[in-house]
Image (cartoon, rainbow, N blue to C red):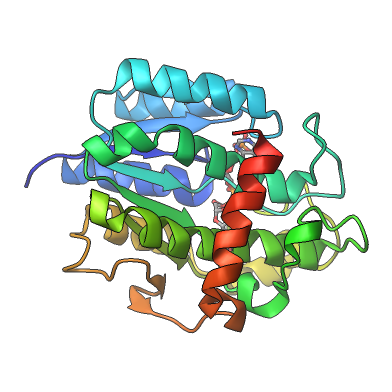
Length: 272
Ligand SMILES: NC(=O)c1ccc[n+]([C@@H]2O[C@H](COP(=O)([O-])OP(=O)(O)OC[C@H]3O[C@@H](n4cnc5c(N)ncnc54)[C@H](OP(=O)(O)O)[C@@H]3O)[C@@H](O)[C@H]2O)c1
């Protein structure tokens, strides 16, 4: 096995931390990215791997993270955009809905600013999306922050739909330059998910109902399968996966013009 350098965001907890452990055990060079300095350092120290801190609620911290990663890693074979979740309604310092920013704008900025390094590395870029993109996603590119009518479900559904549309557009634009892209639903996994959210998500994940969910290792194994796999061989370019198989998507995912508009609007809104 050829070890890959695998950068995982949201690796201080839950699915990201679980995948970091699994990929490290296989023999890959894992790089932990987290928000909480204490939690992130603890996960990295247990594995003896490097770590970086950035709060995606502040895009200036994402820009600093980009520079730190460029300085530290001459190759990035896999970028796993996994940090995310559902949050209460809040406007970030950058003027965006917090849920949309953490799940979409921040990883969009991170990926596009790392593109030259990712292209040089023939990298795979993996988005942790959710089946919620099908249930609640209904994107209006002119109102990505859902300022007209916000709900926790719509905000999260749109953000996770943006992950799949971003995956499609990344594949369309950069596959012929060596980039591979995929998105996936990890399953309903008992993690810290929605601990800063409200309403049905918080209730489901932080009540007796969470006992119905799968454990962290199962959710992590789906990220591990993509990150450890061979794009174009073990998984399809631009695919959306659930349980390691291609899965049904929201009808908006087939709208190539929407994917392109989302990319262009996101560039404008994050200032690149
Ligand atoms: N659990 C599920 O059933 C489920 C289902 C579908 C999709 N997902 C997706 O899976 C991914 C991982 O979630 P999880 O279930 O493992 O939840 P989790 O245990 O809450 O982990 C979320 C990770 O994202 C990080 N994060 C949260 N806010 C952040 C911010 N402002 N800036 C940077 N990092 C931030 C967290 O950092 P801290 O440690 O500092 O909180 C943590 O590392 C998310 O994208 C989530 O939407 C989860």
